[in-house]
Amino acid sequence: MTINNAKITNLFWTGGWDSTFRLLQLLLKKKNPVQPIYVIDSNRKSLALEIKTMKKIKEKVFQNYPFCKELIQTTIYLDAHDLPVDQTLQEAYSGTIKTQHIGVQYLWLANLCKQNNIYPVELSIQQHQNPKRSNFCIASRVSSNMLSRDEKKLYQYFAFPLIDYTKEGMQEEVLNNQWQNIMNMTWFCHLPTKRNNPCGTCAPCTIAIDEGFGWRIPPMNRLRGFSYKRIQKIYRKIKN
Image (cartoon, rainbow, N blue to C red; front, side, top):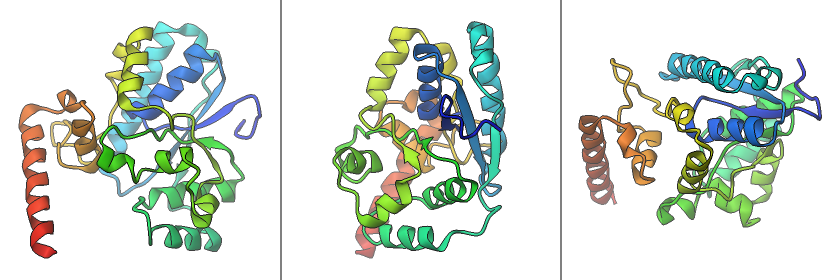
């Protein structure tokens, strides 16, 4: 594995919009060799779809840009639950979630980087266009140098190349470079329906709707997601 080769960029890739955008930037604009790394979470219902999506995207990239066959390395698959969690990272994560809402995947990713001696690995986190989300997102805290001591311990294994981007900014670059046919193949939903459509209710789907990408979700599922958010809002008011 060429996983720590200084000439090759390590990239966490899921087949989603953000990480695929970064993959295309590295390959097509920078002509930079890339080592894709995919972290397997066997509990994730979108696992099979994500792997299938990445395969299709690679085939499309190779078809449209044959020179990329020399740049993109064979994807490395790491199991999120394969290694015991490092105690220092666990403490850093526990300290972070006392003040910031972040997913447990950041603990898994940091743990895999540390215990496999892989770093830095690019993490494709971008700014949220919705102010309510952007004030608390990791990208805003990194770009504003507002990270706590615990956050710095947790994120030290990552590079954040997209922290100054929004979805709108990425979309503009996609259109300018005519990458739409590849980017429209990306997958983002965590709870795909039986017909393998985005559900409209999971966190990535609601974020996609907030950021103007609702067109990627079937209308009925989008409506279901809207209703689900309204119910959640009412429940929170009653609870408080």
